[in-house]
Length: 316
Image 1 (cartoon, rainbow, N blue to C red):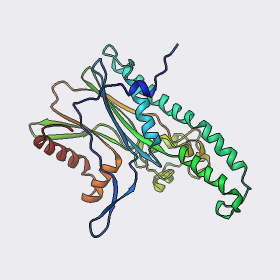
Image 2: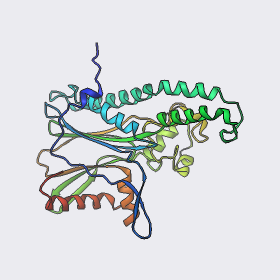
Image 3: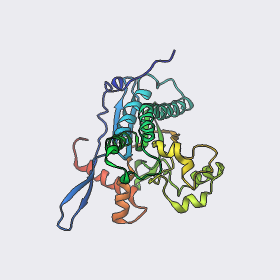
Image 4: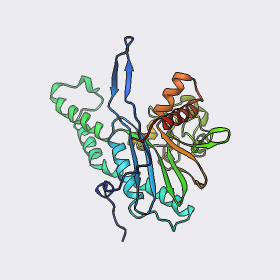
């Protein structure tokens, strides 16, 4: 019999004090320098260590609300740090557990919105067919309001990147467009290595995956976004996962083209390594690209952090 793990279990995990978290809200600025938040924060993070010295870090970049990023953070912690990982496991077993954890989280989230999806179908069946919502008479207003509320409850998705350190080896599991940077101090200065690939429509491996599903990879690359996002892998987003047949350039797919399966790298040995690990969301490196030109974000953020390490006395 397999034990079930809850978010309440994971909330008892001790925080890792060897790490720090920084965030900036989504802001736009007027010409006089005043900033306003475009929308509430949709991202989430975790930094835990288990009693058997397994360290877990994660950054989750959400869209269309923060319900899914909160869900992913809680469930991934429960699926990875409540006894599943231990020092006796080899690299293949650690990778298997990471794959399984992401699969459980994806299925659990989609199951969690089953009732809301059923209610949505019921509400839609009460509306006259072929009439646009804004053209409906007043007696349908309450149904429309409830439908809007239910849509908000079930919409959205998240990109996720997770780092696990076990037996002094580093593992990265990535779904989407967040990044992991391993920054090593060397005789020649700071060496910055991106440990994962961005899962976008520019990624040749992802385009090949689409072609294997019977899709026109060149068309997908030309369109650039899928369901409003550049990511080709994501957690949640039922509209794209279950409605891809309604998207013209995805409709011919033999199976779901947008997946939540993580790409896993590692274990990378950390023996003798002096430096730090950075997990960052797409929003951060895209902001740097926009400000200073493409291709420099990884080096720039690593240099900024190294400068702060030299000035700060804590990671708070």
